[in-house]
Every structure is written in C-alpha cells, then in structure tokens.
Amino acid sequence: MITPITEEDRKRYREEGYHIIPQIIPASLLKDLRREAAKAQAIARRIDGPQAQRLSAINTCREELDMNVFKDFDEIEGLNQAIQDLLTPAHFLQPTADATILFGPCDRPWSTEWHRDFRDHIEKALWEENFGDKAWEGISNDFNFWNQVNCPLYEDNSTWYVPRSFKRVRNTKEERELYASSTQEILRNETSEQSDESLELYCLNYCQAMPDAVQLVLNPGDFCIYRNIGWHIGNYVPYRKRMTIHTQCDTPEFVAFRSKYFPLLNARAASLEKHVKPKEPR
Image (cartoon, rainbow, N blue to C red; front, side):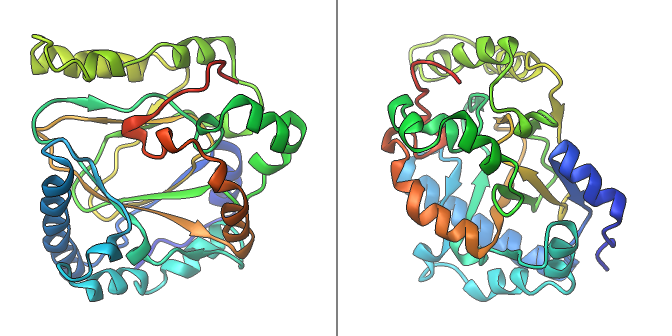
C-alpha cells in the first residue's frame, strides 16, 4: 500500500522541492522490472559502449523488451492518486514506455556536472529572447512544470539535490563558481593514470562542494519526485548496480510547453553525459 500524502508533505515539497514516496513497487513487479532493465542495460551498452548510463525512450526497444512490465508500473494501484495528492488533480505519470532507464557505468567512476535542467542547456541569446529573469520566475515556480521522477530498482544514492534552489532566478556566487568549474575534462581524459579510487573521491568531493546539497538515498521501489530546475547531479561508481526508472509527472500545460520550447535546447547538451554549459552561468 502506498503511503498516503499529507498536507505537510505538500507544503514541504513546495518549499524544499523534493519528496520520496517509499517502496511503491510490489515484489513480483520489482523482479520483472529488474529482468527487463538488465536487458535494457545490455542494449544501451551495445549501442553506446560500457560506460553507457541510460536508455532513453524505452519503447524504441520494444522488440527486445516486454513492454507489459512497464505498463504494469504505470498501473501500480494508488500511484497516480498519490501523484495528484502531492501535486494537483491535473497531474499524471508519463507513460513509462516513453521514459528512460538510468544505469551505472561498467568501467570507471563518473559524475555529471551540477546543473539545472532546461535553463542550463540554452544559449544565452536564446534565453534572453524567449525568457529572461521575469518570465522565468513564474515558469520555475509553476508546479504544473518540472516534476521529475527517479524510481530505483536497486538501492540508489547517486542523486544529489539542493533544496529550495528551484525558486531562485539567479544563482548564488558560490553556485556560479562551482558551475563554472568542471569534472568533465578529467573524466573524459582516456590517457589519465588516476586510479578508480582517485576518480571516485574526486567526483564525491565535487558533489559535496555544492552549498546545502543533500544526497538522496533511495531504497528499491522508492518514488522520488523532485523539481529538476533546482540544482542536482548524478554521481556513479561501477561497483554499485544502478537501474533506475527516470520519468516525470506531466500535465497538459507541460506537454504544450515542451512542444514549444524544447527545440531551443542546444543539441550538444541533449544528454547530461555531453553537457555543454553556456559561456556565462546564470
């Protein structure tokens, strides 16, 4: 049975920007999802190599996966009601067939960069032309938008988040300085002689350097909803099995927003693994 959403949960989500509904997946479905996720991981590695960390749009591999299992996830009893209780009656879970599965790397530790989705993937000129600070303040605080989900099939402590950061139009000085630094040069250096342990601690220190960041420790089947236009990061190590459903709580308004504005996203930054920052962090 899914833990009921309380008014305190609703208030805290609107203040902090994240909420965890514990253990929504029944044991029999968890077993089936793990089986299909393992197949999805093999597909991702076949396409993108051993460091592949996601399979986007699960339904593109429907010939190799049992899509009924993902439909069963969509139909978990009480899940959509919990989403609506936390957010609004207009919200619904994006079909998992359209979602992504996140994986850990096979060979070496890896970290994305600290980022805020959407806003950090648009060149400055396009940003100013289409949004600017005034418009973004309303958009970033509209709870019809930006409700992302991580639901792990194994214990997952990869995600770090900065509570309340989604509310800020402009980043703090400390956030801008950390954002302007980078993990990627070192991680992408294939000639580096650093040990796995050295890279692991390097990435961990980078996560910990963000002011007020918290590490989200999720148990199998936990359903974490978070405001993805707040600061967050993914930090991965090869010795920890990671298979996490990555989706979102949608509304008709957000579907329309994506259709209109997501084409503005810089194609080079379409995935976090290839994240390219604007020249001037906002």
